[in-house]
Image 1 (cartoon, rainbow, N blue to C red):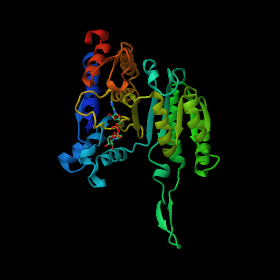
Image 2: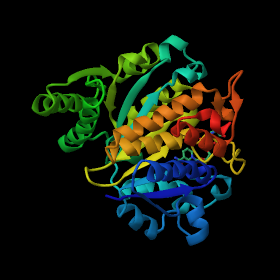
Image 3: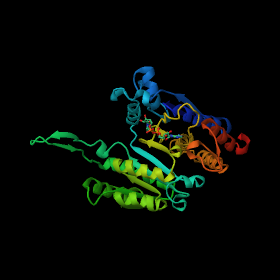
Image 4: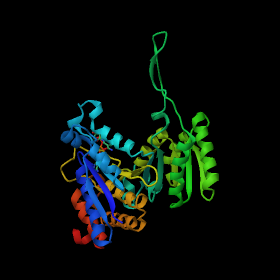
Length: 367
Ligand code: NAD
């Protein structure tokens, strides 16, 4: 069965890094009997320049008709003075909304070869492999009522509302448990059940879901303040962490820094089973290095690897790709952002060359 991948490269380094992922997809087509059909569409500032809107209807239609979407990055100084309604970031928020992506998956994986890039001690992060699952479309970021009101005495009050329904909690819980099934079988649900009723309810629903559908897996609970502390104290204790929109926003950035490098961090956002997922590097469009062919494409290529796992259930190909990344790093090749003493610096497309050589079994052939 052909698998339709929509590539929305976006702005800045987006086109450079997605191009390397497309080369990998084509390699799988040519050498492993895969049938990836790649289409392209506009998003962000590039879309605004061409069509006057950061998320043209054509992109939405193509995304909905695809099996998965690979996104580069959006934004840059060129579009910063635009009205907020047509800024590049609106394209990103818009596509997430259109695809109803309610689960954000952010792995924090530390390749042994890069463990020294972390600000934490080598032994704390070396071999780290955890997954943070953040609820993406509910919670305090979307709850009503919200706003800023004037009080009778002329002062003001600002307010937001933290809301979660049974359905919202259970659907994100299922994503976390299903991931844990393919990993170490452990889910830690993070809340603030001692203070916030809505997250006390979150905990009750997680417990009920666990009992009803996943009692063969392990479920634990942690308050968010402790979770933040444990993430930097002993991150390897976790397998899958699942949490609310706001707590996930904060914890996933904290976990990201365990790896020490923005250029290595992939992400996936998933919606209902059978609908296309969106895969993108965590980093932005890096205007400071755009067009110089020096960006690290590995976050985008690791996002493609997540696509293979979570949208296409192609575990073997994802393992092959991640092994190739490991062997390129072990052979000492690094883009500038992850450069270390004694390593050899390569550019963005050269990193693609190295990976393809590694997929073909001989990294040194590309040197
Ligand atoms: P950024 O992630 O683009 O860059 C931060 C720093 O990291 C820069 O020094 C950059 O050169 C470096 N960097 C980022 N990705 C890299 C890579 N793959 N290889 C090597 N170095 C890399 O964040 P920023 O500078 O705060 O934002 C720049 C633009 O990107 C802004 O317009 C912002 O709104 C946008 N942005 C977009 C997204 C997205 O599309 N998902 C996310 C964050 C920021």
